[in-house]
Amino acid sequence: MITYTFNGTSMRSSELTVEQLVHQEIGHDTGVAVAINAAVVPRSQWSRAICDNDSVEVLTAIQGG
Image 1 (cartoon, rainbow, N blue to C red):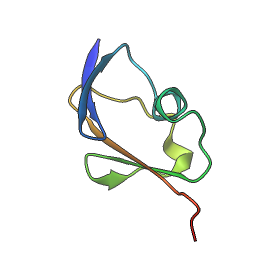
Image 2 (cartoon, rainbow, N blue to C red):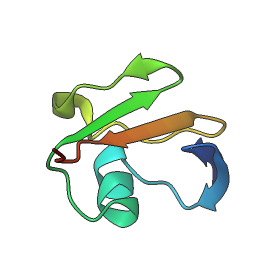
Image 3 (tube, rainbow, N blue to C red):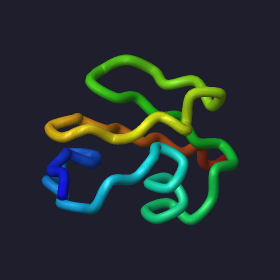
């Protein structure tokens, strides 16, 4: 099990990748940006594993007017 922070909330999970986390917590990957430990993670690196004590921030774009 790993412990990490997701958008300010402490979480525990078995090992998972950035892509798995995005789909688990957000449900889609369109209009999504991810930063781990204050560094942007390009979509090409979403196969990276979330590590113990990582701080993960996920932002989603919304349409408004």
